[in-house]
Length: 385
Ligand SMILES: Cc1ncc(COP(=O)(O)O)c(C=O)c1O
Image (cartoon, rainbow, N blue to C red; front, side, top):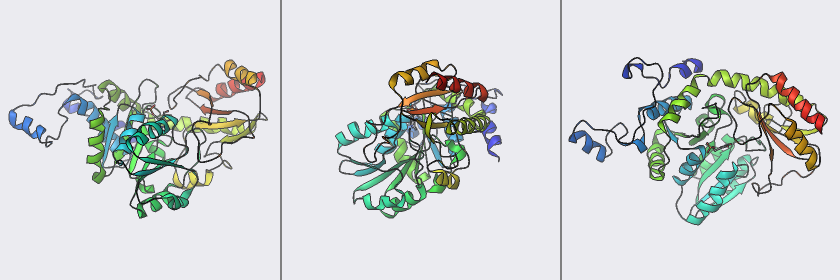
């Protein structure tokens, strides 16, 4: 089935809900069993459906089945946030005394979890240069249980050679977990590139409307039970209403991504030609860092990227941001609206030097507005510099 058809048809069950096309949000805490036999099957973990609201509901199950198919995985589990999915995924793989390798360009709050929580529980964390590729083999220790990748990386968009990293990890008996949020399930076939645990923040493009927070873990059958146990033990379940909204987001995912791709590239090309811009970090832009890996491994691009400006003072930066009308100044991305934020790397990089010769780094998310309006807005902002 073509992906567009899948996005229309997955996760619907009109026959179970009076013909209603959309899955309704099945808000639930208590779920009733028909008889003691079924209840006892639930107690033994042998009941095929959720037995309590924290373990799911029909809306969540429909969303998880849809996401598993889109990720080309055997199973998907949705969580309360993308960060909850990261925490559950990593925690399910490690015990005290283990070691994990983590890309230096990991999403910042996930790094804080590694530094403050994981280390507290006796797990050793080594950050590595995201562009290390097969060289990761030299960092693998006897107790390395997991190699964590995020390609491209947060804020600086380094592409990683995921197959080379996965080959080295697997040779040493370690698993590979990947934050695939940027590429969405549409543009990167993570399992085919050696990823064992696929993670998405559904908050971004999957839900697509900046109105919920949710995470996804997807995996093959052999890892499912362990991941599910950890997610459940952490109590990190999403709300039924958010599951219904995420299902609605899926219906337009492919359409939205086509528009994000086109507009994002247009703005990136425009920025590249601006005299105020030192370098554009957009892996799908020919000549940009990581472009060859992007071309090899991905089938499309979203519209999140950064640009280094040439050196300017803070007052000028303030003028630039404060004059933008169509670009909001706020966290997150993947929604319908355009955003721009200044990025600070000093607290979120330790393994590779941060670029010192340029001015400020700005991360752009190009939304679904008319692209000429967006370019006009940036032009006005640069005029204020
Ligand atoms: C790359 C990446 N991964 C994970 C997350 C965390 O997702 P959430 O905000 O849903 O917890 C974010 C959030 O910005 C992100 O940018």
